[in-house]
Length: 130
Image 1 (spheres, rainbow, N blue to C red):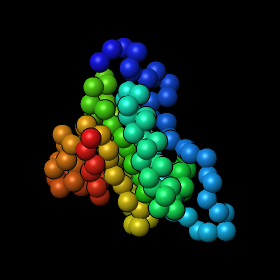
Image 2: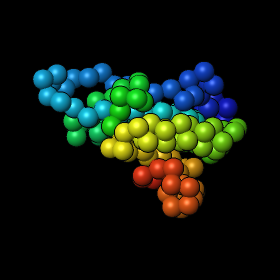
Image 3: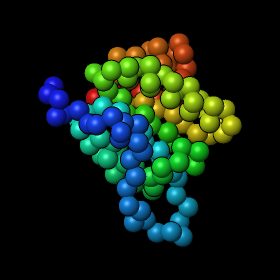
Image 4: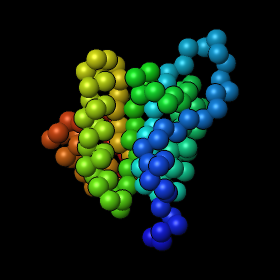
């Protein structure tokens, strides 16, 4: 991976938000997608958001408003695993307040740590690998 494939630090961990074109009179579920890593991860987050949009989800930049919380990960970035674990613990607190919220992790780190995150640590409800 070349350095130009890495996205600058200032946008690591930002939420993916798509323009809402769904009818406002319908009640939509909300998805929050936070992304870490390279251009591919940011692209993948947009794809996931688009797929969920077809299922009547709208994106939000506020994790407290979301019904579905995703973190898209990259295990190549420095300190990525610890950063993601810290965020998952923060999101776990949101889930404690609202048991209907689902937390998922996407990407290469998700695949590598699947059993640990799902079964041992129980930090997520779902894991989606690359």
